[in-house]
Every structure is written in C-alpha cells, then in structure tokens.
Length: 425
Image (cartoon, rainbow, N blue to C red; front, side, top):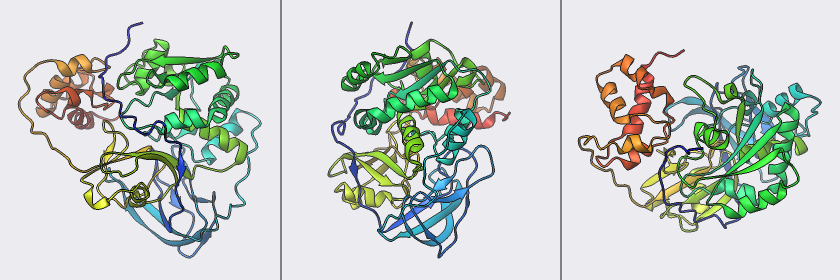
C-alpha cells in the first residue's frame, strides 16, 4: 500500500529519555471553562467557595461539551472572563491553593455495567482528545455506525514533543488496559497501536506485550510528518479513505490519542477526572528541557521557570508543536487540557514573502493531494465555487505546504481562511 505524501523534519526529540517529573503545586491556578472543542461550561462555584481535588467546577447541558474539574484544594478567588489564543472568550475560575490537596467526595470509581454507562463515565471524566484537537471523547465513542477498528494514535510526529512517548514507556499497563477496556465496552473487534518508526523501544515493548493478543496489532508508521493526522493515520494503518464530509466512524474506525486512552483506563480504576497534564517543555530558551506533569490551570510562566528558563529572554512561545502549535500571546496563560508541549525560543525570524514561482513543491508534499497555490489564488478572488472544486475543506492544516514553499508564502494559513468563506452545513 502506497503511503501518503509528507515531509521529513528534524525530530529534535531532546527529552525522549526524560521521565515525567511532577511539578510543585502552584499558589494559584486559573482554570478556563472552555478547554475543548464544543460549548464552554458554566461555572458551578463562586468566589469564596472551598473546592477539593477532583471536584466538578464547571459543566454544560450541551451534548458537545465536557465538564471541568479542579486539580487543587483551596478557595475560589474569583470567577472572571478569559480570552484564549484563538480569541474565544469564556469564564475562568481562579483558585488559591491551600497545599492540602484534599480529594473531593465526588472522586470514586464509576459504576460501569454496559456501553451506555461507560460513555456516561467517560463524559463525567472530562476527557477530550489530548493530542491537541480537544474533541470530546464521549462523542467520539458514541458513533452512529458500526465500528470494527480502534486506532490508537501514538505517532507523535511533530518535532520536540515526547509527552506521548513517555506515556508509552511509563504507563504500559494503562495503555494496554485502556485499549482492551474500550474494545470490550464498545464491542470493537480489532485495535491497531500506531507508532512512528523513530520510537523503536516502544515498538519492541508493545509488540512483546501484545504477542498473545491477535486482536491488537502494533503498526510501525514511516517516520515522516504528518503521520499523526487523523486521515493520514487511518489510511496508513488500514488503507481506508475518509472522504470529504465524512467522519472516521463512517469508515468503521475510531482514532484515540494514546494519552487519552491511558487516562480513560486510570479514570475507570480510580474515579479521578482529568485534572493534570503531561507536557514537553523544550526550545533553545529553556534551561532544562524536560517532560513534566502539572495541574491544569498552572501558568506557562511557572512551567518555564520550573524548567530553569529566563522568561525575559523568550521571544517566541508556542503551545504545542512547531508545525501545528499556537503562538502564545501572554506568558501567564494557563496550561489547559489540550496542552501537550510548550516551546520557548530566544528569537523569531519572520521570513519575507515573495511571488509564487509555480514550482509545485506544495502539491508534492500535501498528504491529501491538494493544490495549495491554486487555493491561494481562488481565495484572493473569493471564488467560492473554485474553492469547493479544489476541496479546500479537506485541508487539515498540517503546514507542510508552508514549510516547503521557497517563496515563504503562508499557504496553510490561507487554506484556513478559505474554509471560512464556504457555507457551513
């Protein structure tokens, strides 16, 4: 089977051998009520209230949403407004920690007796995609079509990030247990654990761990970006094509991030919701690059300082990877559910853009065979019909076209703007 196009990037997995370190508790956490795709939560507490670890502090009646919990015990200092890096506004709860880490009475293993109670438990856990997108997990696990294959995404193809790799190495019981739990509860026959080829230790270990279980297959993906993109990993693992307008479930597949999978297993065992996050901290401004575990709501500033970073020297800060991550406008923004990396650099070079030379490099590297230069032209003249014909909605914003463009044109960014011109269904 021919693999989809992609690009070769320097891996820069500087922290792959750094075990996850627990960061000290901050004095204050700031927890947004919107940390996932979907409707934001409404605060369930007010200023002056006492909260405990694992207590639900935000929820929403909308189906496409997940609740929010406190990772600390302490007193609610305020409930205010918060604007994230995308410009979206939601409520934010600020909590002064008391250092006692009292666990809420709400924290107890959920009673799971069938598929419906399992889905309810996953929702109550606050789980969402931990690979960066933040899709509510209980929605993903409730498809309307029959599913025959579960794909666990352990590609982690972006440079620098090693948080998922450390999950593979340090949490083998939770990863395998999570795969078997989800397969069992959803009645899925087969699972594929997809790992990029630059992680030989993990591939060897999980091949051994699953040797006696024919229903779980370890897939070695080519070491090329963007192997972790949902449509790419589905095709490279199964040969199935998710067509325009389709969901993976329409092709009988569910894709879950490996860290999400391990979390679900731990939640079913303990009842502790999603209140901490493992993330990689790296970049040339970071004094001690490492993988850390911190409570959600910890400020990026404190994370950087814990990693011996002189924050005054940081000129570029990225939440996530260098290809699909988001520039951070404020170093005091909080760690959220989807934070898998924080990259800090001492300089930022804004490359000068020139005219397209029609070299075709962007077409050759696009995993989905799109024509970014033509999309760019159609967008500029606002030709809606041509944008539809060019299948701009298939673009997953991997950034490969922008990366290889010799004219330094911001093709991936233009694709996203072009999508906004099309009518929403």
